[in-house]
Image (cartoon, rainbow, N blue to C red):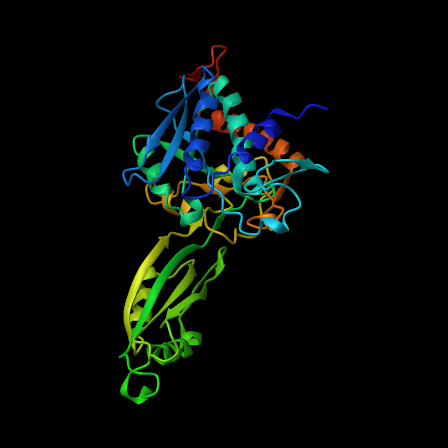
Length: 379
């Protein structure tokens, strides 16, 4: 039996090894751009970010203007394959086995991207005001999302769908992230006479002893905030008293002002410097929002555990613009060996995204035209 169009498209996307920071990221964007250029109902533009590192593709309806857009925002990059010997299938082979397509990025998030691409091309042919933005660098702390935000500045975005891995459940948000580099300083000395130096590692242990007292908040939906010390670096050889120690801290914030967390670390005795490596906003849409009510999918009672590009996009969107995370990927396989996705879920996502677009069109007071354009209803 021949594969469905979305499965064929997903195979092509997974076969592009678009690892974050690699040249294949742009190859993936070019593929998306060229795929839409085959349709008279869509326009696709490749946009380089101002930093010269990242880029995005912005896909717009060719026959719709001056409308509030329903935006799908996805990323093309994938994490590296560091455990290739643990895979039972070629990580970039996109082979379908027992109803699941295997490969790096199959769940995160090329399945959601493929479903959105198929749905959007169909919706553009009906004159529905939907758009697609595809970024690079998401796996590097949403690095490419700022370029997407800049590309959207002249547009009116009414709602956003992030087609990440939620098993086709509508997820109403996720916590933000604050990554810090915290440093303690000491004085170097020979390891045989440690009393002549000041050990920066020992200073750091005193700082970390106070970690249970850190004032973490909570949110009614996003849940409790967390803190994780994920890395530590200091010294180089055992016979030198280390004069510097740096830890990498990951805060997942929901309600606390990030500056309060920065200040807490700066106020610890022994801390000589606190640097902000990453700052991403929390995202939350109320379940009673009209946009959530119109979506043809089960609404999850839990937030996403991960962050998405929405953390950057919300900074430039109008206040209270609804944003949901909703896609066919399987979060349990993300970033792991044998990452895979259920192809039935991907095909279902196409239908749900298409229906969401049609309901968006109706809510915007537009009706389809035979020529692919739109007319205002009741004007």
